[in-house]
Length: 372
Ligand code: CO8
Image (cartoon, rainbow, N blue to C red; front, side, top):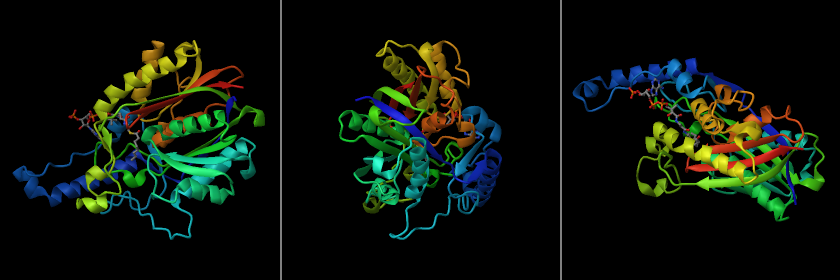
C-alpha cells in the first residue's frame, strides 16, 4: 500500500511580535528588576539581569518576528505572559480551535470531506489538558468517524505523528489520516529569561496522508519511507506536569517552563541530524545532491546552514532549504511542515525532498518524499 501526502494546512495567528517590541519590553522588565533588587545585586546575592538585543537575536537565531495566539499580557512588564481566559467545558478548547482551522485547509487541499477521514492524530509539544484528547474534540468538531489520539514528541511531534499515520495506512488500519500540530507554545515561554524569550512562536499545521488509490489531489507526494531516532538529553527540558500538584514546589517556577543549554543542543544535534539524513537517503541509494528540497526543522538558521553544509559540502540555497523562522520563529514541531506548506508547489514529478525535524528529547524524525 503506497502512502501519499496529499494536502497541508496552516493556521497563522493574527497577532505578531517583532524583535524590537519584544526586546523593548524585556529590557524595561530587566531595568525594573534591577532597580527593585539593587541592594541584593550590590551585595552579590542576586545577579543583575543584562539587556537583550535585537542584533544578537537576529544573528544568533535568524528570528525577526513571531506570531502569537494572544499578544495581550506578553509585553506587560508586570506580567510577562499571555492572558488567555479559561474556557468552560462546553466551549471548544484553544488548541482544538487552532487545529480545526489548519485541518480544514489541509482537507480542502487534499479534496477530502469528513467522511473520507478514518483517524485524527493531534501531535505537538504540549496539550492543554490530559483528557479527553484534543484529537477526539477535533474529530467531533469536524464530524469525523473512526478514532483519534494525542501524541507528545516535542520538536519531532509532527514528523513522528506522520510516521504513525504512514504505518496505519501501510497496515490498512486506516486509509486516510489527518495529522495536526496545534503548537500553542507561548504560555510555556519564560519571557523574563534573556536566553530564551525570543525563540518561539505559535502556529498550527495539518497534513493529510492517504492510501494511493484514493488520491485526487494534483499536488501530492509519495512518502517513500520514514526514519526516527531518539536519544535522552535534559539539555532541552520543561518540568511542567501533573505531578507538580503533589510536589509542593513552585508550579510556575522557571524549571517548569521551557529552558535549554542552547550551545550544547546546537553542538549535539547538528551532527546527529546530518547523519540521520545521510542514512535515510542512503537506504534509497540517494545522496544529498539528489534532493530538490529540504524542509528542515526551524529552530535556528545557523543549525540549518551547518547541517546542509555537512551534507552538501556547501551551504544550501534558500531555494533548496527554505527558511520560515525569520517570520514564524521556532514553532516547536510545526516548522518543517510550515516550510513544506509554503514551498512545495514548484517541484515537478519525480523530484525528491526530505522533511526533517530535530530537537528536544533529543528526537529526530524524517520523511523522504517524491513528487507524483
Ligand atoms: N541578547 C543579547 N545577548 C544575549 C542574549 C540576548 N537575548 N542571549 C544570550 N546572550 C549572550 C550570552 O549571555 C552570551 O554572552 P557571553 O558570551 O558573554 O556568555 C552570548 O550572548 C552567547 O550566548 P549563547 O552561547 O547562549 O548564544 P548562542 O550563540 O549559542 O545562541 C541560541 C543562542 C540562539 C539559543 C543557540 O544556542 C541555539 O539556537 N541553539 C540551538 C537551540 C535549539 O535548537 N533548541 C531547540 C529548541 S527546542 C524545540 O525546538 C522545541 C521544544 C519544545 C517547544 C518549547 C516551546 C516553549
